[in-house]
Amino acid sequence: MGRAMDQVLLQEAVELARKLWHAYIIEPSDESVQFIVDTMDPQNLSLIGTGKHELYVNLEAFFAGLERDQEEAQDITFEILDEYYEPRAIGEDTCIVFGTLWARERPDRPKPLLVEMDTRFTLVFRREGDRWLLVHLHHSTPNVDQRREEYYPKTATEQANAALEYSKAMERRAELDSMTELLNHAAFEKYVAGGACRGGEGSAFFMIDLDNFKTVNDTLGHPEGDRVIQEFADVLLRVFPRDALVDTMHEALARPELDDFEYGCFMSGPSKTADIEQALVFGAHGPMSITVVLR
Image 1 (cartoon, rainbow, N blue to C red):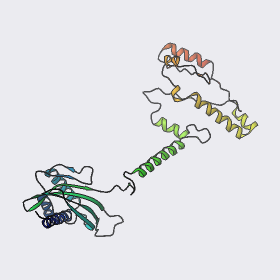
Image 2: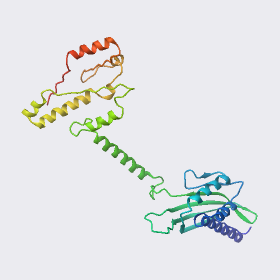
Image 3: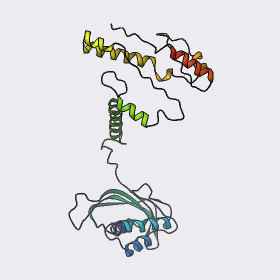
Image 4: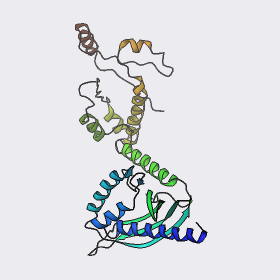
């Protein structure tokens, strides 16, 4: 096989590749499907399409997928705006044709958005007798999130993560009271509605009232009253961290001594008579008190 003949055969492969794409994109019909199938190697065929599910390992699987594609495209007419084909001989009887294809929907009436395919492809042909047979096709679309100078969509991933973190921060911020940074009433209702106090894990609610708080506002002014609320909120955040809550008395006794302050709150469930009596005795002494010292 001389060099001139090689080029002739390679151009035949290019022309066959072009006809295959035109039959698939521009002229979807039963005749086009039959032409495409007739050009494929029935014994040794694999195809990879642009869809995640489009991985075909034999002619039967591809034929079923092709029929679905043709049914889906019945109401859509495409035109090829640009196409490029480049052949390469990779063996005595094998060649590849790779290139790019840009096709767009040609609607019968104006539409705001059109279906568009800007793709790349590689076709592998094997020579059998006087014709080429397609043994492999890989059809892909460029990652629109990947910048020209990047080898993976790094920038888009970083931007998506930053947007997600910002969204979480804003969502969390919306649940906090602006002065105390404790959960606000709307957040309280959300957690209750979400099952925070339903069966399963135990739940507890503290209803806390600041005695003589009106006196602080009347005598020292509302800014100082706000400071009292903020200081008290800070105490609550230090007294009730999530990791300080335990389920049993044994776990509480196993905890090491606290360095900054010593405080404990034991709540007994009414599962035993002794627990009920103990709870009543504690309740008889009235609510616990806490002193906030302004510095």
